[in-house]
Amino acid sequence: MGASTVEAQENVAVDVAEQIRDVLLGLSARTAVNIPGLSPDIMDSLKPHLQLAETLGLLISQLSGGQIDKLELKLQGEFVQHPSKPLIIASLKGLLSKALGDRINYVNASLEAESRGISVIENKDESRPEFASGLLQLTTYGDKGENSVAGSIFADGELRIISIDQYPVNVSPSRYMLLTRHRDMPGIIGKLGSLLGNNNVNIASMQVGRKIVRGEAVMVLSIDDPVPSNLLQSILEVEGINSANPVTL
Picture 1 (cartoon, rainbow, N blue to C red):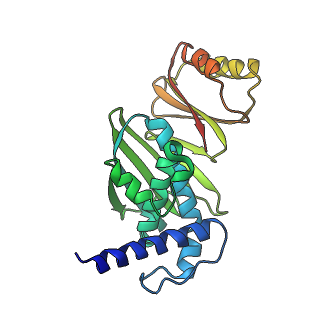
Picture 2: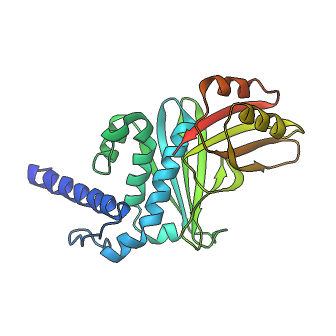
Picture 3: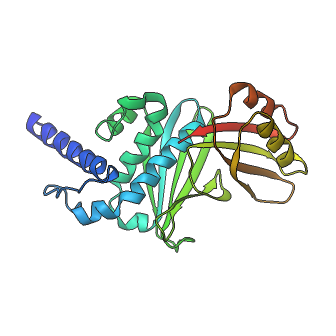
């Protein structure tokens, strides 16, 4: 491949990334004459989809931990109808934001993922979606196993997290969240609520997702403050709680 070809491809990648950045900042999208399908109207309609992709990427990075080797995107409904490359870039930016902070952006997200050995798989699901706008599901594979999160966009444009590790939930993303895996047994929710209250951590909302009664469940708490490390240790000592992940979005 000649130097001019490589330079042209890099310019295209930068152009795509800059358009994504502009749309997420609320600026007018520019026409990309060299990128078929990425008109200003399409980029504007993609804004909530890109926000969801980045949010899910940031969320799953804090659930996965360890080394991530592969990221799989499952697209369904409206997410299949739009160009997938911007969604991949936004997902990778979210995935790497916790580790790289301000160093990660829409221009270098794909290159940073590649340099860390993260492969990306795209799976377009043409089946009838459960939600009107479809869903975007991210699944990571790494040295600590497999994790997945899925989200959708509701009619009012609100982002929703609709599943965590295949457990159904219905949660609006918030700045601070606490996710637990626990046995579905009496007393767990009360004990956790008391612990948080005694440490002046206010609960804004709570959702529990389970597959079977008295089996394992996922609890998602939206909270007003981050969870202190000493409180996290106390949470993990509660009988029945198997894991607890504080999340900052």
